[in-house]
Length: 190
Image (cartoon, rainbow, N blue to C red; front, side, top):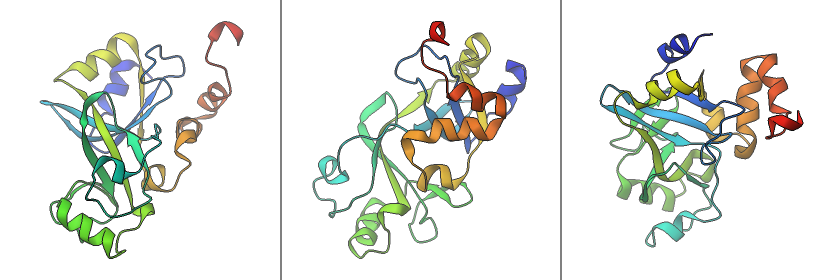
């Protein structure tokens, strides 16, 4: 598939998968869920960079809660975002794909967590985000073919071993990509 065909598949609710031999150490073997794709720019969250912290470490008045926290990306690392399954009961949530919502009323979220209406398997927290200015992602894809595009599924976000999601998503794309996931990082040794 040509770079232009891949670029045409970009959109809100899609996954960006780092090409197997991407050289950027920050994004190497990453999977990014695009939550906002517009001519004004693109926003997404890395699904496979868990941090060793609890949401209470980030937000002191948050209830005790064992939900995973991830590095969302290199932009605005002083912000916290969340994807969840509770859009029908959390005001202000934006549905990205069926069953996956972004954001919403934070005070209401704390109340729902305190009352165990939302459990750790219903939400993922992110520190920072991945972002591209207008045309930047398309240029990156056209010039370097750094990313593959795939359809997202709630299972990739909430019911997956997050560190293995890169291999899983590539394996679902085709047998050719599945083979590449078993190769080492240094192409000279493959």
